[in-house]
Image (cartoon, rainbow, N blue to C red; front, side, top):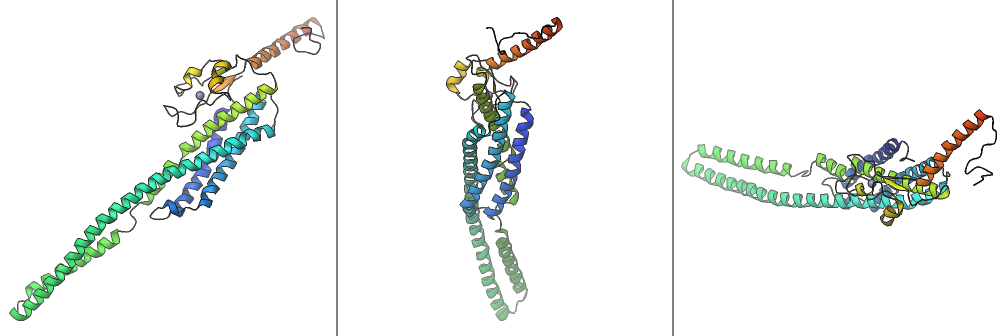
Length: 321
Ligand SMILES: [Zn+2]
């Protein structure tokens, strides 16, 4: 049997649901951090909410995929088994998601803080200079006014007044500039880096592979049973990574040593080419039973043509062998 049916559609819908959530979380995070953006402004309750919402969305998708995979392999629609598998996975995914956002935003806000600090030191130096110029201009004006009174020379007073006005203007301009050292567009792109679409896609791809594997293994164990010849398949395209590639075509006794639960062979981000695992298992016993089914159909057809109403085949009631 092949990979999960409609895998691309399932995965895309999983990613879309997560991205919808992520987009709201990005907006909330920006508002909570404020300006200048500070991670300390974000309360613990918000982080908990993010974790819970991601967990709920992931849980639902994992259950749906597990059940779909189980049914695809002729297994039961066992919601309890699906929930047991999905609950632990979803909470791990949500916890990792939260930690990853926290880690990235912490690094980013620390860089911003350093920039704000160095900018404000630079600014303080410039302001000091501007302030000194104002004081100098005031002194000069006093001197020129005194000179004008004793020597009756007027021209230089007007010039000294102009110099003071210029120095005052410059100081006022500097004070205005100090506001908002981190641009809103920069904050927006930092939150996209931390909680972006590619995060949603990675979680969805790996989650889909995990749930499809778990559902398939569950169904096979409940029905035709495992075989040593159950074979690992990659998607066999140009996106297959160097971790998955050598597993292609290997039997259960080989792959189960490293991956007892089947695919995925790696978590997102741990592959050298940063591709998520989309592998699946082809089940030997299922293949046999499918072959048997078509053989049965053929026998039935031939029997019908002969007019025989009780054809015998392996696996039927009253099986002779
Ligand atoms: Zn893989």
